[in-house]
Image (tube, rainbow, N blue to C red):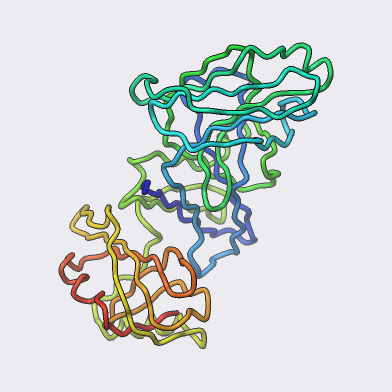
Length: 332
């Protein structure tokens, strides 16, 4: 299972903002004016929203190919007809048809010996000129598929073109009006955006982007800051104050810890895992509390399984002693 980087969004402005996430270009594409930003990952956030708003970005690359009657260019919507998960050292070939008839491409992996830290995308010897004279345009894409949508880039491939790409784990977060999968310029995305680089801007795979009341950006490591609460009783009271009427008392049936669960940085502990509860979940809960300790809910699988994490001063053993089968918890 690939690691997932989480970018939390904090809106301190006076109005709702729609945040968009973009993936930085590999160095090999930086100077190519025919490569455009492509994103369908957006999230609307209210001012000073009390909930958790974030983009979850798995380190799982995808490559794609398509064809349509729209030429690749600014503001053109590009969605790949075929996509594939891709790994470093993969070699992929897109097989574009020469018309007639108008037909989408096929795509297949042709090797695993791309240079270290790269992947290769190539195209066959289709007749681009003939196709485009008949208004049939090919496209090619590279990026990451997130829960919120695709983030990446698209271009129009040449026949027998080979692109060797060195992926860069850096992200832009912008606030504004974009259209889903509508191609944008890199200047538009990067000039007034927050830039988040992995791993340097992350702590325990988490980073927070803040858009302040003056329209300025800041990036901090880790999740959004919470007030330090030393007393177990205070922890419980604060957690309960967030629950209101939408709460559920339950019992843990089973616990599993994720493979990257145990991480340490600056004296804190980070763990993540999955719990199974005994009752069907009755709401979209965001936290749960056990013995005064608050855990963040990061995902839900069906009606009984919950992905969660913990970041704080307690030791790994202390957390494992708390989160056990039979433990009672309060969801909210």
